[in-house]
Amino acid sequence: MKPGIMEEVPWSDAITVYDKENFTIYMQILDACADNAPIEEMAELILGIDPALEPVRARNAVRSHIDRANWMVTTGYKELFAS
Image 1: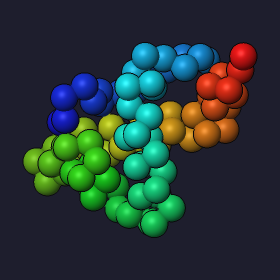
Image 2: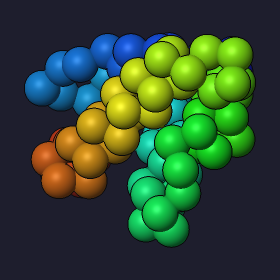
Image 3: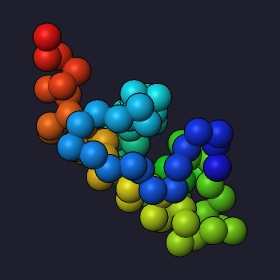
Image 4: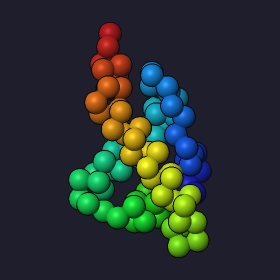
């Protein structure tokens, strides 16, 4: 796994330090989802997890990041633009 990337994204109703540090990862995940990339590809190329060696961990980490990325673009973004 790439340094600083967690298997389970810390969840909060507010933007977290993890969100700020990994915003680019979220956008890469959303872009890959839009391209219908397989979870295994996202795990390996974006999160740095070998899905052949750790299939459950890879799937869980991608799912967690997809969920948080979706939250960021539907709800969390409001906090980024609040004055």
